[in-house]
Figure 1: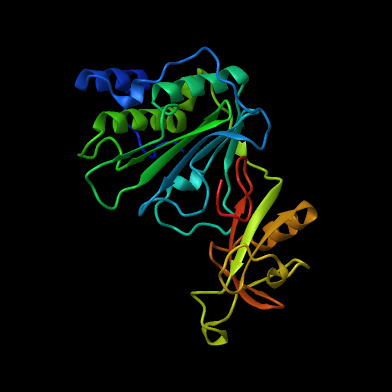
Figure 2: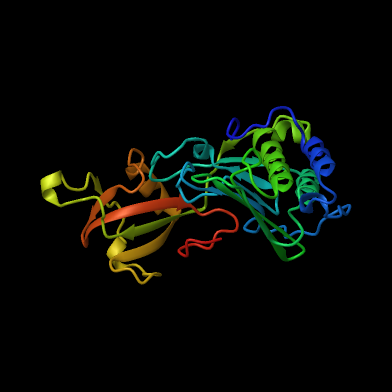
Length: 283
């Protein structure tokens, strides 16, 4: 996700010092930094998640970054693009970090104030993105969010600048932070979550009808409905069905309408990633 929100060559350490100069004790730099943090090492356990939401953020249902306990780090490359629908099945970029590199990022998280009390920092601005940072260490979840970023006017500016510095280093300059060239590949998920609902932008055969045919034996109308919405279903696609579905969806955009035996369905899809709770919309 190089190039999304750069604050120049300023490192987080430099931002922390600048923040301290402007206030007696900014919350964002008050957390002590131990030598090593205890973390869950299972591959399905997220220990760091960064989510960006707002008017100008990508709406593909994926976090900007997630780091799991076994060192898998995922970035959402589409998050750099504003407001577009994108493909039906969004992709993520994947790399692997060592145990010591994980600790480097966690120590940086602590210096950014992400391991203290939960907090929200609001800028005096409208129509801005909100970035939420979630860190899970020692079985404890810490959540800090920033609305508007460090360049916006308003309270808690020191804290917001520090969080921008953390974002910049982890998502824009990870190579420099770790002192090596991080090799990125396409993420190959073990499963895909597909939600199907009543079409909201389709008006029947007179508009041309659905352009895509549902390719699997399991009909969207026959799966569990985890919500109170009418004509809504969610299924997890695994195994050989994944190859069939992804091939059929290769050119389909997000929110495309598909024709199944039970009728037309508007689909959303996303890879199941570490920390995700499938078919709940949450993490």
